[in-house]
Image 1: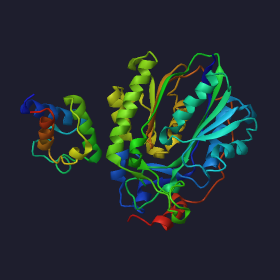
Image 2: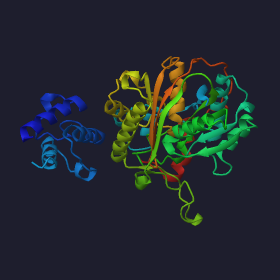
Image 3: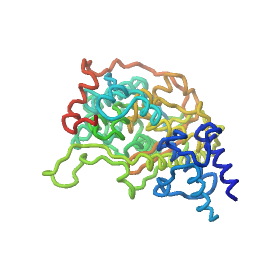
Image 4: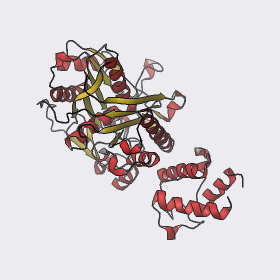
Length: 81
Length: 356
Protein backbone atom coordinates (compact mmCIF):
# COMPACT_ATOMS: atom_id res chain seq x y z
CA UNK A 1 0.00 0.00 0.00
CA UNK A 2 1.55 3.35 -0.95
CA UNK A 3 1.41 6.53 1.06
CA UNK A 4 -1.43 8.07 -0.93
CA UNK A 5 -3.59 5.02 -0.26
CA UNK A 6 -2.82 5.08 3.46
CA UNK A 7 -3.64 8.80 3.59
CA UNK A 8 -6.92 8.25 1.79
CA UNK A 9 -7.94 5.33 4.01
CA UNK A 10 -6.89 7.28 7.12
CA UNK A 11 -9.13 10.16 6.05
CA UNK A 12 -12.06 7.79 5.54
CA UNK A 13 -11.53 6.30 9.01
CA UNK A 14 -11.45 9.72 10.64
CA UNK A 15 -14.70 10.62 8.93
CA UNK A 16 -16.48 7.29 9.46
CA UNK A 17 -15.23 6.26 12.90
CA UNK A 18 -14.68 9.58 14.64
CA UNK A 19 -17.23 11.71 12.78
CA UNK A 20 -14.69 14.36 11.78
CA UNK A 21 -15.54 16.88 9.05
CA UNK A 22 -13.67 15.78 5.91
CA UNK A 23 -12.74 19.36 5.01
CA UNK A 24 -10.82 19.77 8.25
CA UNK A 25 -8.54 16.78 7.67
CA UNK A 26 -5.07 17.76 6.51
CA UNK A 27 -1.83 15.88 7.10
CA UNK A 28 -0.59 18.74 9.27
CA UNK A 29 -3.76 18.81 11.40
CA UNK A 30 -3.23 17.98 15.07
CA UNK A 31 -5.71 15.56 16.63
CA UNK A 32 -6.10 17.41 19.89
CA UNK A 33 -6.25 21.05 18.72
CA UNK A 34 -7.36 21.08 15.09
CA UNK A 35 -9.62 18.02 15.03
CA UNK A 36 -10.72 18.13 18.69
CA UNK A 37 -10.10 14.42 19.18
CA UNK A 38 -9.68 13.59 22.88
CA UNK A 39 -7.53 10.86 24.41
CA UNK A 40 -10.23 8.21 24.04
CA UNK A 41 -10.74 9.32 20.45
CA UNK A 42 -7.08 8.60 19.76
CA UNK A 43 -7.58 5.11 21.21
CA UNK A 44 -10.65 4.62 19.03
CA UNK A 45 -8.61 5.69 16.00
CA UNK A 46 -5.79 3.29 16.89
CA UNK A 47 -8.19 0.41 17.17
CA UNK A 48 -9.67 1.34 13.79
CA UNK A 49 -6.16 1.55 12.29
CA UNK A 50 -5.29 -1.87 13.67
CA UNK A 51 -8.44 -3.42 12.29
CA UNK A 52 -8.28 -1.74 8.91
CA UNK A 53 -4.55 -1.89 8.20
CA UNK A 54 -3.86 -5.19 9.99
CA UNK A 55 -1.08 -3.64 12.08
CA UNK A 56 -0.43 -3.65 15.82
CA UNK A 57 0.26 -0.33 17.55
CA UNK A 58 1.30 -0.44 21.23
CA UNK A 59 0.16 2.41 23.50
CA UNK A 60 3.73 3.73 23.97
CA UNK A 61 4.05 4.40 20.26
CA UNK A 62 0.52 5.69 20.02
CA UNK A 63 1.24 8.38 22.61
CA UNK A 64 3.76 9.99 20.23
CA UNK A 65 1.20 10.63 17.50
CA UNK A 66 0.32 14.33 17.32
CA UNK A 67 -0.83 14.92 13.74
CA UNK A 68 -2.67 13.01 11.04
CA UNK A 69 0.62 12.87 9.07
CA UNK A 70 2.39 11.26 12.03
CA UNK A 71 -0.34 8.64 12.24
CA UNK A 72 0.19 7.93 8.54
CA UNK A 73 3.97 7.69 9.15
CA UNK A 74 3.41 5.15 11.91
CA UNK A 75 1.09 3.01 9.80
CA UNK A 76 3.58 3.15 6.87
CA UNK A 77 6.37 2.09 9.21
CA UNK A 78 4.25 -0.77 10.56
CA UNK A 79 3.40 -1.88 7.05
CA UNK A 80 7.12 -1.97 6.35
CA UNK A 81 6.97 0.75 3.70
CA UNK B 1 -31.29 -31.40 33.22
CA UNK B 2 -33.47 -28.41 34.17
CA UNK B 3 -33.13 -25.00 32.56
CA UNK B 4 -32.26 -22.04 34.75
CA UNK B 5 -34.59 -19.11 34.17
CA UNK B 6 -34.62 -15.60 35.60
CA UNK B 7 -38.02 -15.32 37.28
CA UNK B 8 -37.52 -12.21 39.41
CA UNK B 9 -35.63 -8.94 39.17
CA UNK B 10 -35.24 -5.75 41.13
CA UNK B 11 -33.02 -2.80 41.81
CA UNK B 12 -32.22 -0.33 44.53
CA UNK B 13 -30.59 2.98 43.81
CA UNK B 14 -30.07 5.39 46.70
CA UNK B 15 -31.90 8.74 46.44
CA UNK B 16 -29.01 11.23 46.71
CA UNK B 17 -27.96 12.40 43.23
CA UNK B 18 -24.45 13.67 42.44
CA UNK B 19 -24.53 15.70 39.24
CA UNK B 20 -21.62 16.65 37.01
CA UNK B 21 -21.96 20.24 38.18
CA UNK B 22 -21.73 19.04 41.80
CA UNK B 23 -18.48 17.34 40.82
CA UNK B 24 -17.14 20.62 39.47
CA UNK B 25 -17.03 21.80 43.09
CA UNK B 26 -14.98 18.76 44.18
CA UNK B 27 -12.50 18.11 41.41
CA UNK B 28 -10.93 19.74 38.36
CA UNK B 29 -13.53 18.72 35.80
CA UNK B 30 -16.53 20.01 33.86
CA UNK B 31 -19.93 18.74 32.81
CA UNK B 32 -18.77 18.96 29.19
CA UNK B 33 -15.59 16.92 29.87
CA UNK B 34 -17.46 14.19 31.75
CA UNK B 35 -20.36 14.03 29.29
CA UNK B 36 -18.27 13.81 26.12
CA UNK B 37 -15.79 11.30 27.54
CA UNK B 38 -18.12 9.06 29.53
CA UNK B 39 -21.79 9.76 28.77
CA UNK B 40 -22.43 10.13 32.51
CA UNK B 41 -24.68 12.99 33.69
CA UNK B 42 -25.29 11.94 37.28
CA UNK B 43 -24.75 9.09 39.71
CA UNK B 44 -26.20 8.07 43.11
CA UNK B 45 -24.42 8.30 46.45
CA UNK B 46 -25.55 5.95 49.19
CA UNK B 47 -26.50 7.06 52.70
CA UNK B 48 -26.74 3.41 53.80
CA UNK B 49 -24.52 0.34 53.62
CA UNK B 50 -23.95 -1.90 50.64
CA UNK B 51 -25.96 -4.72 52.25
CA UNK B 52 -28.93 -2.37 52.83
CA UNK B 53 -29.16 -1.56 49.11
CA UNK B 54 -28.73 -5.26 48.29
CA UNK B 55 -31.48 -6.31 50.67
CA UNK B 56 -33.97 -3.91 49.06
CA UNK B 57 -33.05 -5.03 45.53
CA UNK B 58 -33.32 -8.66 46.66
CA UNK B 59 -36.80 -8.13 48.15
CA UNK B 60 -38.00 -6.62 44.87
CA UNK B 61 -36.56 -9.57 42.95
CA UNK B 62 -38.23 -12.07 45.30
CA UNK B 63 -41.59 -10.34 44.97
CA UNK B 64 -41.26 -10.29 41.18
CA UNK B 65 -40.62 -14.04 41.29
CA UNK B 66 -43.55 -14.58 43.64
CA UNK B 67 -41.28 -16.22 46.22
CA UNK B 68 -40.67 -15.98 49.94
CA UNK B 69 -37.13 -15.39 51.24
CA UNK B 70 -37.15 -18.90 52.72
CA UNK B 71 -37.62 -20.37 49.22
CA UNK B 72 -34.04 -19.40 48.30
CA UNK B 73 -31.33 -22.10 48.35
CA UNK B 74 -28.31 -19.93 47.66
CA UNK B 75 -27.36 -16.26 47.65
CA UNK B 76 -24.42 -15.21 45.50
CA UNK B 77 -23.46 -11.63 46.14
CA UNK B 78 -21.23 -10.13 43.47
CA UNK B 79 -19.46 -7.17 45.01
CA UNK B 80 -16.01 -5.72 45.53
CA UNK B 81 -17.22 -3.20 48.12
CA UNK B 82 -18.78 -5.33 50.91
CA UNK B 83 -19.67 -3.67 54.23
CA UNK B 84 -16.96 -5.81 55.81
CA UNK B 85 -14.82 -8.73 54.74
CA UNK B 86 -16.31 -10.64 57.68
CA UNK B 87 -19.12 -11.45 57.86
CA UNK B 88 -19.60 -11.55 54.11
CA UNK B 89 -22.10 -9.19 52.51
CA UNK B 90 -24.04 -12.23 51.30
CA UNK B 91 -24.66 -13.43 54.84
CA UNK B 92 -25.61 -9.90 55.91
CA UNK B 93 -28.23 -9.79 53.16
CA UNK B 94 -29.41 -13.26 54.12
CA UNK B 95 -30.08 -12.00 57.65
CA UNK B 96 -31.69 -8.75 56.49
CA UNK B 97 -34.19 -10.45 54.19
CA UNK B 98 -34.70 -13.59 56.31
CA UNK B 99 -33.52 -16.14 53.74
CA UNK B 100 -32.99 -18.66 56.52
CA UNK B 101 -32.61 -21.73 54.31
CA UNK B 102 -30.05 -20.21 51.94
CA UNK B 103 -26.31 -20.65 51.81
CA UNK B 104 -24.70 -17.28 51.17
CA UNK B 105 -21.40 -16.13 49.79
CA UNK B 106 -19.64 -13.21 48.14
CA UNK B 107 -17.99 -13.32 44.74
CA UNK B 108 -15.51 -10.69 43.57
CA UNK B 109 -14.87 -10.37 39.88
CA UNK B 110 -15.12 -6.56 39.96
CA UNK B 111 -17.32 -5.14 37.18
CA UNK B 112 -17.74 -8.62 35.68
CA UNK B 113 -18.96 -10.00 39.01
CA UNK B 114 -22.65 -10.22 38.17
CA UNK B 115 -22.02 -12.37 35.09
CA UNK B 116 -19.57 -14.58 36.99
CA UNK B 117 -22.26 -15.03 39.65
CA UNK B 118 -25.06 -15.55 37.13
CA UNK B 119 -23.15 -18.28 35.30
CA UNK B 120 -22.20 -19.95 38.60
CA UNK B 121 -25.86 -19.97 39.63
CA UNK B 122 -26.88 -21.28 36.21
CA UNK B 123 -24.45 -24.17 36.43
CA UNK B 124 -25.43 -25.13 39.99
CA UNK B 125 -29.09 -25.19 38.99
CA UNK B 126 -28.46 -27.21 35.84
CA UNK B 127 -26.36 -29.65 37.84
CA UNK B 128 -29.38 -30.17 40.07
CA UNK B 129 -27.74 -29.08 43.31
CA UNK B 130 -29.74 -25.86 43.72
CA UNK B 131 -33.26 -24.92 42.64
CA UNK B 132 -33.57 -21.24 43.47
CA UNK B 133 -30.66 -18.85 43.57
CA UNK B 134 -30.61 -15.15 44.35
CA UNK B 135 -27.86 -13.36 42.43
CA UNK B 136 -27.10 -9.83 43.53
CA UNK B 137 -24.75 -7.29 41.98
CA UNK B 138 -24.15 -4.40 44.33
CA UNK B 139 -21.57 -1.73 45.07
CA UNK B 140 -20.92 1.21 47.33
CA UNK B 141 -18.08 2.63 45.27
CA UNK B 142 -18.58 6.13 46.67
CA UNK B 143 -16.58 4.93 49.69
CA UNK B 144 -13.47 4.78 47.48
CA UNK B 145 -13.85 8.14 45.74
CA UNK B 146 -10.81 10.40 45.94
CA UNK B 147 -11.52 13.79 44.38
CA UNK B 148 -7.84 14.59 43.98
CA UNK B 149 -8.05 12.00 41.18
CA UNK B 150 -10.20 13.56 38.49
CA UNK B 151 -9.76 10.60 36.16
CA UNK B 152 -11.66 8.14 38.37
CA UNK B 153 -13.72 10.16 40.84
CA UNK B 154 -16.24 11.21 38.19
CA UNK B 155 -16.99 7.70 36.95
CA UNK B 156 -18.51 5.71 39.78
CA UNK B 157 -21.74 5.50 41.70
CA UNK B 158 -23.67 3.32 44.14
CA UNK B 159 -26.51 0.91 43.56
CA UNK B 160 -27.74 -2.67 43.63
CA UNK B 161 -29.58 -5.03 41.32
CA UNK B 162 -30.77 -8.58 41.89
CA UNK B 163 -32.28 -11.48 40.01
CA UNK B 164 -33.85 -14.75 41.10
CA UNK B 165 -32.91 -17.75 38.96
CA UNK B 166 -34.97 -20.90 39.19
CA UNK B 167 -34.83 -24.42 37.87
CA UNK B 168 -37.53 -24.71 35.23
CA UNK B 169 -38.79 -26.87 32.41
CA UNK B 170 -39.46 -23.74 30.42
CA UNK B 171 -37.26 -23.09 27.37
CA UNK B 172 -34.59 -20.42 27.69
CA UNK B 173 -31.87 -19.39 30.07
CA UNK B 174 -28.15 -19.07 29.45
CA UNK B 175 -27.47 -20.48 26.00
CA UNK B 176 -23.73 -19.88 26.21
CA UNK B 177 -21.29 -17.99 28.38
CA UNK B 178 -17.60 -17.22 28.62
CA UNK B 179 -15.61 -16.05 31.61
CA UNK B 180 -12.05 -14.76 31.40
CA UNK B 181 -9.33 -13.15 33.48
CA UNK B 182 -5.88 -11.68 33.00
CA UNK B 183 -4.15 -10.91 36.27
CA UNK B 184 -0.89 -9.82 34.65
CA UNK B 185 -2.01 -6.22 34.14
CA UNK B 186 -4.08 -5.77 37.28
CA UNK B 187 -2.38 -2.50 38.25
CA UNK B 188 -4.00 -0.72 35.31
CA UNK B 189 -7.29 -0.71 37.24
CA UNK B 190 -6.99 -1.19 40.96
CA UNK B 191 -8.11 0.00 44.38
CA UNK B 192 -5.23 0.30 46.84
CA UNK B 193 -6.09 0.56 50.52
CA UNK B 194 -9.01 -1.86 50.26
CA UNK B 195 -7.41 -5.08 51.51
CA UNK B 196 -4.71 -6.56 53.70
CA UNK B 197 -1.56 -5.82 51.72
CA UNK B 198 1.26 -4.31 53.75
CA UNK B 199 1.19 -3.71 57.45
CA UNK B 200 -1.79 -2.58 59.52
CA UNK B 201 0.51 0.26 60.64
CA UNK B 202 0.42 1.66 57.12
CA UNK B 203 -3.31 1.81 56.57
CA UNK B 204 -4.13 4.12 53.67
CA UNK B 205 -7.46 5.55 52.63
CA UNK B 206 -8.94 3.56 49.75
CA UNK B 207 -8.97 4.99 46.24
CA UNK B 208 -9.41 3.82 42.66
CA UNK B 209 -6.60 4.10 40.12
CA UNK B 210 -7.08 3.57 36.41
CA UNK B 211 -5.07 3.95 33.20
CA UNK B 212 -8.06 5.07 31.16
CA UNK B 213 -6.93 4.73 27.53
CA UNK B 214 -5.33 1.31 28.09
CA UNK B 215 -8.39 0.01 29.97
CA UNK B 216 -10.66 1.44 27.26
CA UNK B 217 -8.90 -0.54 24.56
CA UNK B 218 -8.81 -3.78 26.54
CA UNK B 219 -12.47 -3.42 27.50
CA UNK B 220 -13.65 -2.92 23.92
CA UNK B 221 -11.64 -5.85 22.60
CA UNK B 222 -12.62 -8.19 25.45
CA UNK B 223 -16.31 -7.32 25.48
CA UNK B 224 -16.65 -7.20 21.71
CA UNK B 225 -14.75 -10.40 20.98
CA UNK B 226 -16.16 -12.46 23.86
CA UNK B 227 -19.66 -11.41 22.83
CA UNK B 228 -18.98 -12.55 19.27
CA UNK B 229 -17.67 -15.90 20.57
CA UNK B 230 -20.67 -16.61 22.82
CA UNK B 231 -23.09 -15.74 20.02
CA UNK B 232 -21.30 -18.27 17.83
CA UNK B 233 -21.12 -20.80 20.66
CA UNK B 234 -24.90 -20.50 21.09
CA UNK B 235 -25.28 -21.33 17.40
CA UNK B 236 -26.70 -17.89 16.68
CA UNK B 237 -25.79 -14.94 14.51
CA UNK B 238 -26.00 -11.18 15.09
CA UNK B 239 -29.43 -11.02 13.45
CA UNK B 240 -30.78 -13.24 16.24
CA UNK B 241 -29.81 -10.79 18.97
CA UNK B 242 -32.60 -8.55 20.25
CA UNK B 243 -30.67 -6.56 22.84
CA UNK B 244 -27.11 -6.19 24.10
CA UNK B 245 -27.01 -5.31 27.79
CA UNK B 246 -23.40 -4.32 28.42
CA UNK B 247 -21.69 -3.34 31.64
CA UNK B 248 -22.14 0.43 31.92
CA UNK B 249 -18.63 1.82 32.44
CA UNK B 250 -18.38 4.43 29.72
CA UNK B 251 -20.75 5.14 26.84
CA UNK B 252 -17.82 5.28 24.44
CA UNK B 253 -16.72 1.78 25.47
CA UNK B 254 -20.31 0.66 24.88
CA UNK B 255 -20.49 2.36 21.46
CA UNK B 256 -17.10 1.02 20.39
CA UNK B 257 -18.03 -2.48 21.57
CA UNK B 258 -21.26 -2.40 19.58
CA UNK B 259 -19.34 -1.17 16.51
CA UNK B 260 -16.73 -3.89 16.89
CA UNK B 261 -19.50 -6.44 17.17
CA UNK B 262 -21.42 -4.93 14.23
CA UNK B 263 -24.56 -4.30 16.28
CA UNK B 264 -26.96 -1.43 15.59
CA UNK B 265 -26.93 1.14 18.47
CA UNK B 266 -30.72 0.70 18.70
CA UNK B 267 -30.07 -2.86 19.92
CA UNK B 268 -27.93 -1.74 22.85
CA UNK B 269 -29.26 -0.90 26.30
CA UNK B 270 -27.67 2.20 27.84
CA UNK B 271 -28.61 3.86 31.14
CA UNK B 272 -25.16 5.10 32.19
CA UNK B 273 -26.24 8.76 32.09
CA UNK B 274 -28.31 8.24 35.26
CA UNK B 275 -26.05 6.04 37.39
CA UNK B 276 -22.45 6.11 36.16
CA UNK B 277 -20.44 2.95 36.68
CA UNK B 278 -21.88 0.90 39.55
CA UNK B 279 -19.54 -2.02 38.79
CA UNK B 280 -21.24 -5.37 39.42
CA UNK B 281 -24.63 -3.65 39.80
CA UNK B 282 -24.86 -2.19 36.28
CA UNK B 283 -26.20 -5.26 34.49
CA UNK B 284 -28.91 -6.32 36.99
CA UNK B 285 -30.07 -2.69 37.25
CA UNK B 286 -30.13 -2.52 33.44
CA UNK B 287 -32.06 -5.81 33.17
CA UNK B 288 -34.67 -4.47 35.61
CA UNK B 289 -35.05 -1.17 33.76
CA UNK B 290 -35.07 -2.83 30.32
CA UNK B 291 -37.99 -4.99 31.51
CA UNK B 292 -39.83 -1.98 32.93
CA UNK B 293 -39.37 -0.17 29.61
CA UNK B 294 -40.56 -3.13 27.55
CA UNK B 295 -37.18 -3.58 25.87
CA UNK B 296 -37.13 -7.25 26.91
CA UNK B 297 -40.03 -9.33 25.61
CA UNK B 298 -40.98 -12.98 26.05
CA UNK B 299 -38.36 -15.05 24.25
CA UNK B 300 -36.00 -12.10 23.68
CA UNK B 301 -32.43 -13.12 22.96
CA UNK B 302 -30.05 -11.01 25.01
CA UNK B 303 -26.28 -10.68 25.14
CA UNK B 304 -24.67 -9.61 28.40
CA UNK B 305 -21.05 -8.44 28.38
CA UNK B 306 -18.76 -7.03 31.03
CA UNK B 307 -15.17 -6.06 31.66
CA UNK B 308 -13.55 -5.00 34.90
CA UNK B 309 -10.62 -4.83 37.24
CA UNK B 310 -8.45 -7.90 37.55
CA UNK B 311 -8.74 -7.90 34.62
CA UNK B 312 -11.90 -9.92 34.35
CA UNK B 313 -14.40 -10.18 31.55
CA UNK B 314 -17.52 -12.15 30.75
CA UNK B 315 -20.12 -12.50 28.05
CA UNK B 316 -23.30 -14.54 27.87
CA UNK B 317 -26.22 -15.19 25.57
CA UNK B 318 -29.46 -15.39 27.51
CA UNK B 319 -32.89 -16.23 26.13
CA UNK B 320 -35.67 -14.69 28.19
CA UNK B 321 -38.52 -16.91 29.35
CA UNK B 322 -42.23 -16.35 28.82
CA UNK B 323 -42.89 -13.86 31.59
CA UNK B 324 -41.72 -10.24 31.59
CA UNK B 325 -44.15 -8.90 34.20
CA UNK B 326 -43.47 -9.24 37.93
CA UNK B 327 -45.72 -11.63 39.86
CA UNK B 328 -45.70 -9.31 42.85
CA UNK B 329 -44.48 -5.90 43.91
CA UNK B 330 -42.47 -5.34 47.08
CA UNK B 331 -42.81 -2.22 49.17
CA UNK B 332 -39.21 -2.55 50.35
CA UNK B 333 -37.36 0.77 50.33
CA UNK B 334 -34.32 2.40 51.89
CA UNK B 335 -34.85 4.61 54.92
CA UNK B 336 -35.41 8.19 53.71
CA UNK B 337 -32.65 10.77 53.95
CA UNK B 338 -32.42 14.53 53.74
CA UNK B 339 -28.69 14.40 53.06
CA UNK B 340 -27.40 15.65 49.72
CA UNK B 341 -24.75 13.77 47.77
CA UNK B 342 -22.23 16.51 48.49
CA UNK B 343 -22.92 16.19 52.22
CA UNK B 344 -22.55 12.41 52.05
CA UNK B 345 -19.14 12.83 50.37
CA UNK B 346 -17.70 15.13 53.04
CA UNK B 347 -15.79 12.23 54.66
CA UNK B 348 -14.05 11.55 51.32
CA UNK B 349 -13.05 15.22 51.11
CA UNK B 350 -11.87 15.15 54.73
CA UNK B 351 -9.63 12.14 54.07
CA UNK B 352 -8.26 12.89 50.59
CA UNK B 353 -8.89 16.58 50.07
CA UNK B 354 -10.44 18.20 47.02
CA UNK B 355 -9.10 18.32 43.48
CA UNK B 356 -10.00 21.96 42.95
